[in-house]
Amino acid sequence: MSSSRPHITRRPPSMVMRLERLGSLHQCRLSFMRILMRRMAEEHWHFSRPVFDIDDTGVGCAVYTAKGPNRSYSLVAFAHDLPAELRSDRVIAEAWDATFTMFDGVPTAGDIARLKQNVPLQEAGRVSESELSLSRANRSVRLWEHVVSALAAGKQPDTHTIEQVGYLMRTTAVYGSGKFGAADRDTLSNRAELHPPFQLEMLSVYLTRTFVRDLIEHAAEAKGGTKAAKLDKSLARGLGIGNSTGLGMAPFVVNHPVLFNNWIMAREEAICRARSVISASDEAVQIFSDRLKRSALSVSKWTSEHPIQIQKIDALRDDLRRLYKHIEQIDFANAYPWNQLMIWAEANLSSEGQELLASLILEPYPELVDGLADCMADDGAGVSSIDGAMPIGDVKNLLETCFGWAAELDWQDPKTCARAWYVSEEKLEPRLGERFEEPIADYEQPLAPARDASLAISDLQGWAPTDTVSDFLFRHPEHRHTVRRAQLSRIAPYGEIRDNTISHDVLPIDMLRAKLSFFGATHFDPRSDRWVRICMFAGAPYPEELSTQNADDWVYPAMAP
Image (cartoon, rainbow, N blue to C red; front, side):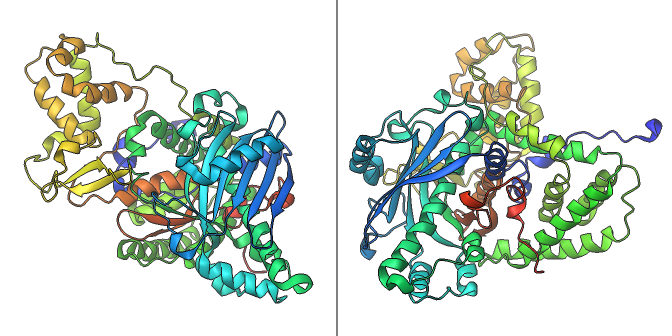
């Protein structure tokens, strides 16, 4: 057996880090929502609602506390009576249907009074190190009114109407990591429950979902009195929290190469471990088959109006038909069945199908996969400092490994550098403009690492391999950020996108999809090539239902009995 054992390694960055593939990633066991839910269930977190002071007009405050083994976190929620003309999902909006903060511990009446003066103002307010995040949300007006009216009349809302929208409220921002005076990430990262990325933000959204359910039942009771019904548990479970994500998120994967590397590398290591399993047990095959069937059900309900996404969904459905047919011919008792399946997929399925399969083969192996969650944060303080003593020959090798392909592009071709990233003065968020049609070149942000690397490679010609980086940067300080990125690639091989981020045909939604897949989002619905709509925690158990039996596979819809 040892002589025929395949040499299974992680897939190379040159394959994984292409935008088309990053834009085809799916949630998996290492998605941040699932990491959080597993932890809360395994550690038997306790949930309570110490405050629910909402009047009959739907205005007031509520507090939801999650108590873990070592400390508590409380979502402080403020519900508002928002006039229709003020409702906007734009970042520059100044009023919302609901506003939130995550409080470190359990707030006192004094804390709540202070937060009431500031949290509804969001950016215009002030929060302290006792607050860990700041967020806001707006109603899906059509679905909200339908559900309130139905429950007030003692009826359940229409299932099809609920499935069409999927959420009663959508967040327009969830801010953490020190924004607006809130506690900085560095002060919290030593807490085990917050060490994996975005756990605080996921907890905020999870508790927000509970608040929204309670709020709409309260609104129905205020309208219908004693005849009002509670929302059916299965219908409530199908509702998530919506989110519309735009260009503001896209540069994240460029600006955080080590962190993004850690996400991708953890997933690739998990895939490698599954592919290295010598033989699949009957239980493993059963788990895989169950998740595959439920994924197919999920894909059958995945709709989009965006032409590119429509094509990808159609291709994925065709992939699933091919996969089902192929699996009928597989003997999972043969050596390395998951590796053989992945090899077949690379030759026969689209990137969507390959990446869905890559996620699914992880499902039977929590003992191989789940511990990698602790490797996904960026704990490398100081790793971004430049090593000035590095020989020029070494930095050239690093640049050519990551960006050798970029040096072959014609950067004088207007199509190659057609776009430019800049920060909008109005929204104070990244935007992508047409370089040769708008006066934005002077405001360009350093979000074109491939072009910059190509320029650095060109300027390095003529330097002796033994010359030092410090000498080179003394002459060419404009290349400091490129040299820093090259040196980071020694510890972050998956940190660089292997595509041109300013090309005329770049699709920023690929960057959005990559990040959101790690959040755990499903049913991506691009509204253009620059923003996408998602739903979070749809299907998840509510706090009073959470157990080790339902904490993890809720992301796959249940099959009809």
